[in-house]
Image (cartoon, rainbow, N blue to C red; front, top):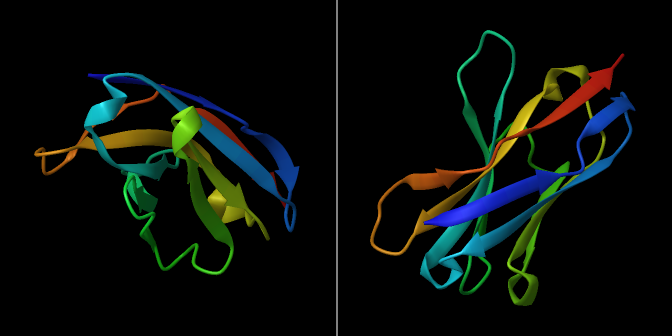
Amino acid sequence: QVQLTESGGGLVQAGGSLRLSCAASGRTFSINAMGWFRQAPGKERRFVAAITWSGGRTTYADSVKGRFTISSDNAKNTVYLQMNSLKPEDTAVYYCAVQRVGVPRYDDWGQGTQVTVSS
């Protein structure tokens, strides 16, 4: 199992920026990819972005393309989400997750960090 700790959330005005961090510990050698998801009040958790641990291939939800950037520092077992041009609709709890080698889903989750964008 991989333990995840997110940080970097907060309150920001529309148009502003935030950077989220997610540090992994435990069985980090088993990581195949890491992703960010978000859940707004009363809504389902949705995919935001992901990055493969080997090769750094990235994918994004259409709603954040061109505004958010996911990156990783493998030496620190940390993934980042740089969020620019934030909109009120980006308000949500953001979760970091791990997809482990041989497991076709995200199985390990962080506790979440709140991002609130005011208009």
